[in-house]
Image (cartoon, one colour):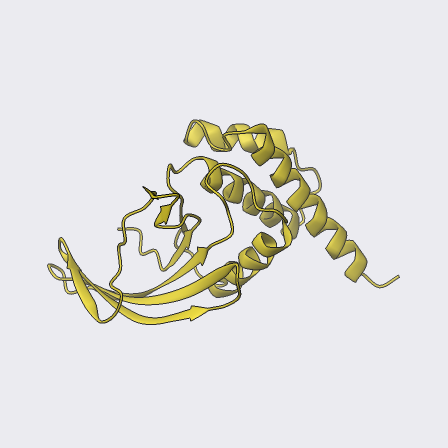
Length: 180
């Protein structure tokens, strides 16, 4: 409905024998999901931490078609945080490179729509504001704003600390890249 073309998936389909997410794309070829035909165009394992899929989506009622790109992060345990921020920051960079120049929203999802989704969204919002030259950024206020939209975003102290660490590491990487 919003013309989305980029999906960020932060959960495995199944983890520890527990289903976390239903598969909304076919293994190969095409499948019908209600009024949508979804065709898997490609699937590329980018690195051990994530893969990228491309889908062709057709609304069978309106005949509208579009191509979707799904970025699937594989290294985020259900109960916890990734062991390092670097893979997630590299993943985010890849997502944003694909998204550049588009105005539609990015769909971000995990298993409950709050923990991993909230943490990723917080990191992304703060780093996007920094890249736009915002001089003062209040990360706690940004989290409060996110929680006003969806209660429960960033579920644990560990997730918040992970977000802070990711932002700090990205700032340090930017500072190191500046000419002396």
